[in-house]
Amino acid sequence: MIIRQDNKMADLIHMNYLLISVINRFGIDLGFRDKTVFEVCREHHIDVRFFLEIVNAFHDKDYFPDEDLQDFSIRLIVDYLAKTHRYYLDEKIPEIEQLIDEMVNTCFNQTDNLNMLQKFFKEYKEELAHHTKREDEVVFPYAIHVEKAFTRGKADPDLKNQMNGYSITDYINEHDNIEEKLFDLKNIIIKYLPPPKNRALCNKVLSELFNLEKDMNDHSRIEEKVLVPKVIVMEKQLRKQDN
Image 1 (cartoon, rainbow, N blue to C red):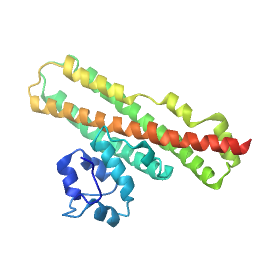
Image 2: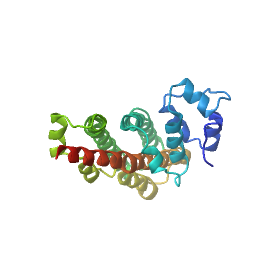
Image 3: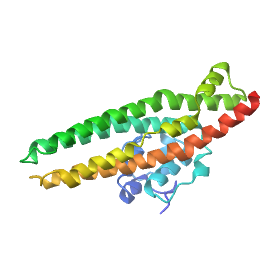
Image 4: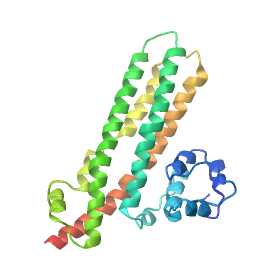
């Protein structure tokens, strides 16, 4: 079912509870009563078209209108992606880390492979932080700089120097596959940990990891299929103007 602006915002949560975190990233909290998506977005000064493209892309894996998302500014896309990074690092990762620590401390009689689990998650957390920091501090500002120059019709000397030493295609080539490491983390729990004393807690950890993996896959699709192609087009045009 395609989510539309006349749907009640509360109905989105009933359709897919995983959309709660996506909606929160737009600065929208629960308590929207019977207001429609359009009404809530208007109150929060949110572009309702952009909101609908994002929630539909997360709600339905087969819904991904690349061309529609290409209509929106790079700054708008980057702002959303950066907020998603903060959600991962400030909320989701600490929550999962706390659950893993609780699981390790209370769910097992044996210590085999438990240290490996905690060590692997710590390394994953550090790698994710490094990955998002590079995007926030290098990739996203570069993309916005390119868009500003494209709008003006000319690259300034600083951007020309940047483009000579870096392009958005370099980012594609160096884009770490964080999702694969998340899959490995799930496998440690599924395949190698001893039977837990608290099965519910163990299942909760796995459920949270699966949800995070899905969220990150959708996040990466927006980066690689919307942001990057949009910047590539602008880079090419700016280089043509410089020749």
